[in-house]
Structure formats: structure tokens, C-alpha cells
Length: 334
Ligand SMILES: Nc1ncnc2c1ncn2[C@@H]1O[C@H](COP(=O)(O)OP(=O)(O)OP(=O)(O)O)[C@@H](O)[C@H]1O
Ligand SMILES: [Mg+2]
Picture 1: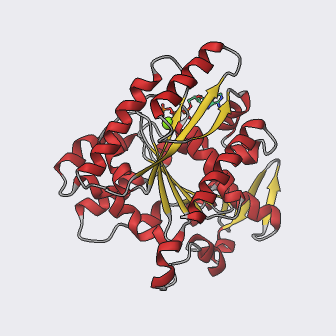
Picture 2: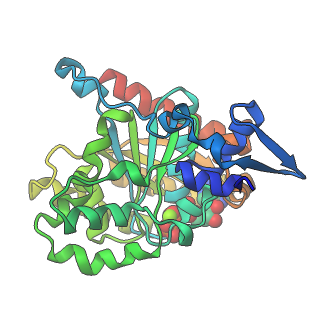
Picture 3: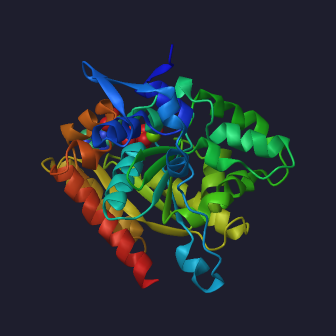
């Protein structure tokens, strides 16, 4: 009897997102039978080289040194050691709106909590190839990092390097590593030419993982939920950024700007906090935009879909689109 697979099994086999398989089935790209709302596929239909090409379809950079700088991905670390301020939401939402503009975007989940991985519909516990497995493979062998093995397609132009709880071991393994601050940088190096943007979702701490993200990033984006005492926390993060520059781990690291998240426009308290923050920033660091408190955002993370897919017309999506335009324009102008 012939081998019949579910969409999830086919996705694991081809190393793509289950939603990609569903889309291919819908578009008739792979023959499939629909049983209820699920697809069944024949194993032999997955052997076509063009499907493999799609998997490997993240083209190698063209060797054109003049365009190398322009083509190289801009790495943006989304960081704030305070928990629950919207780092993961911002990473996911910005990634999806940049991809919608035709940019090639890779999201990197650098948090052992793996909220980014889960919010994109994947089960972290089932992930075999993750950011940590690639870092380990690289740290334990002489071989270049096999980063592509861990990349999962999420949507057109949008891909993810997932994470899971295993990454928490990095706090033990990384400190003993030679050039321990550069492990992420070296892990991402093989795919820099294949993307326009790499957005790194940092954990809520100023740990060695966050330092790794700041060391490899071109810039750092700071989501801030306007609550009392927020300026203290932001100050600590800026000190860390300054240390990363000063110690020459990454002298060219910029702070791209702040994104105000979960903003409730009504209370005067919120406005007061925003004014205090502006005074602290003293015009040196821009506030790139404001995302209001929105139930749509919470629904999107629960749906397993990127925000711009789940609610393309939501106010929060529009806010992230405007912020993406600012990032995009700044990059063009650079
Ligand atoms: N603008 C918003 N409106 C309403 N809820 C939001 C908004 N932004 C984020 N949230 C919700 O707040 C919670 C925390 O957001 P998120 O996970 O993005 O924060 P985080 O900074 O990544 O957290 P952690 O520090 O734990 O990694 C989530 O439930 C998310 O859905
Ligand atoms: Mg998070």
C-alpha cells in the first residue's frame, strides 16, 4: 500500500511550515485529497525536485562585492530586559509587514520561552532543529554552522529559526565558549546574503544571549510599554548598548529607536510617562511609533498566524506598517 501523509508529516519531511503545505495543496501544486478540513498527500508526490528547491529556495548570495553591503541582511535586535513589553509581538508583526512589502525576512527566536515560535503556529517541543541546536553543532564541531537546516518557512518572504526550552542551557554552555559573544553572529553568517532583514527576538534579560544579539546586530529596537518607572529600565538597556560599543564587541551598533506598545491613550498617567520618556531620550533616540492596546494582537498570537495575515486591516497592523516604513526608509537613505 502507498504511504499517505498528513500535511504536518509532509511539512516535517520537506522542512517547511505546515501552512506552506496547505497552501501548495490549495493551489494544486501538490496533488492531495481533502478529508474534512485536512489534506492527505502521497509520499511519492513529495519527491519532486522543485519542492526541494523551494526548501532550499533561499538563494545563495550573488557574488557581487559592490552590492554586497546593500544585499546583506540588516540585523535588528528587538530587546528590552523588561518582560511582557511586546518584543515578541513586535518581532512577529514587523517581520510580517516587511514581508508583505516584498522584503525577505528571517525571524530568529532567541528566547527559551519560545513565544515567537509558538505564536507562529509551531510547537516548540517538537522542533528538532532550533537556533540552539545550530549553535551547539557549530560550537561542538569544526564545521560551519548548518543554519539553513533550522529555517522554517512561515509565509511568502517570511521565515523563522525557532527556539525551545533547550536554549536555556545556553546560559551554561555559552560562557565556556571561545568568543562567546560572537556565537550568534557566526551562526547567522551563512544566511546573511539570503535575507533583507533578520529580526532577533531577545529574551527578557541582559544575559549573554542578549549580548550575542547586540553583538551581531546593526541596530537595536526597543519596545516600551509606558508604565511608571519605565525610564529606569530603558536606561539600563542603553548602558548595555553603550558597553557593547565601548568594549568593541560591536562599535557600530545603533539604537534604531523606541516603539511604544500597549498604549492606552486615555489615562493622563500614560501621557505623563511618555513625556518623561521623551525628556530622558532628549531627542537623541527617536520614538518610531505607537501601538495601542489591542485585543487583535492577543488574538493573533493565539491564532498562530502573523498579525498582518490574521487582521490585515486592524489599527495595530497599520501602526506596525508605519513603523516598518520608517525602518525601510532609513535603510534606503543610509
Ligand atoms: N499592543 C498590544 N495590545 C495588547 N496586547 C499586547 C500588545 N502588544 C503585546 N501584547 C500582549 O502582551 C503580552 C506580552 O507580549 P509579548 O510576548 O510580545 O512581550 P515580550 O516582551 O516578548 O514578553 P517576554 O519578555 O516574556 O518575552 C502578549 O500576551 C501579547 O499578546
Ligand atoms: Mg518575548
